[in-house]
Image (cartoon, rainbow, N blue to C red; front, side, top):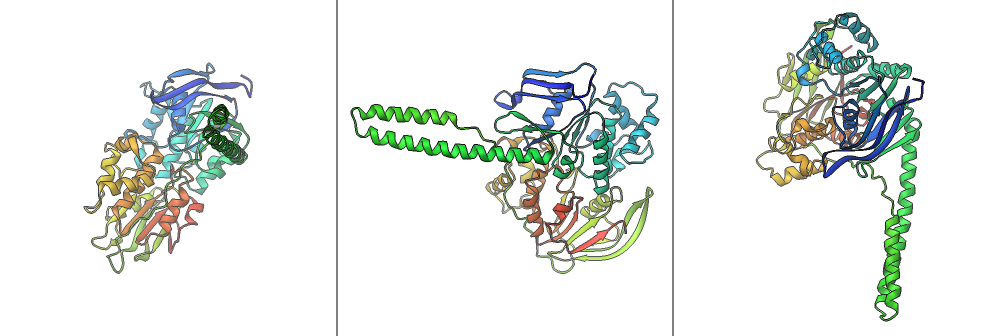
Length: 488
């Protein structure tokens, strides 16, 4: 097949989990060989679902998905499924290659070494998957797709958990990648470095619009189009109201004037039909405050020593850091050095060398959301952290601020998108009122429109806070009082 030939086409495709609630309605687009395409759209618009349709996990209700014969497809998923966390690296890659068919792969070892080198990772093949850090697991997800040697590579939030070096390595790889790639991400700088075009999923019209150009150019095209549509609609609404006012005036005159009034109403109806369905921008969560239990006086946290990972071995280090109320600590260090492990031990109050004041309520935001019970409904998950003085009405008000309303309340937490799970986790922190806030990569999977709101809330948090984040733009918006670099 020649470069730039179409290898994937959607033709009048409609899809929804319920016939009354379509995610996609009669969408059309095509992907050409060798291109790098970005998918844009609000949380819940169906970005990851689109990948499921391409891979055959989901079946369209109507329309056709045409993938050229012989074109292979692989997905780099957002997270490693829980049932794959307990297996070895070899078993993890065997499962990726065979797609659960059980077939034996005889040349697996050199193939594993090759893809691990591509993603800049070295590890023993009998190492258990869950022993890797969040950033290392992100690299494994990419490697599990690459080992399939696909013609069409689908990347779902590939920069989540990656440190600066990891993102730079992935960016360089994609720039040189000769095959076709479709990417979902909220990282604008990352996307702009390699994007040829954009598929925009509109949550409200349920259509997909296709644009050509780099990410920033397309985003500007969308903004200008919206401004133009809004101006046109404002003019039409002005004319509609003028015709309605005239119709009312002539109708009161009686006689022949009633015919004039009818014409005015007909004209108003014609103008209403011309109003364009403008793209509604992604809804942003409301500004919020995480209330802090500030009854504890003195030191809330005292860290005297900690462990880091160097050459796959734990190394003890000393420090002397104290956190009181309204003091924020940033943990720094590359992927795999032990940041998440340290945070988890602190959250469980089991960290050797860390003393947390007695009676302090700990609020823990974990990057893989494993602090949430995926079998709980969203309603039960939120009610479980409410204090006795908090009513259901208050809980629902907090949830609504995080765009958690309606049917979503009664969905299982495990059925939500990763971005929605993140918003549930933040809503729980607001209801919990912690005295110590421990946050591990709180921007992962979160819509970029929400991130400044979250940063503002963390900046104003009045309890003690320990934060890990590889997003410099996010960290810059938060007051940091102390930094502990695990590498130095």
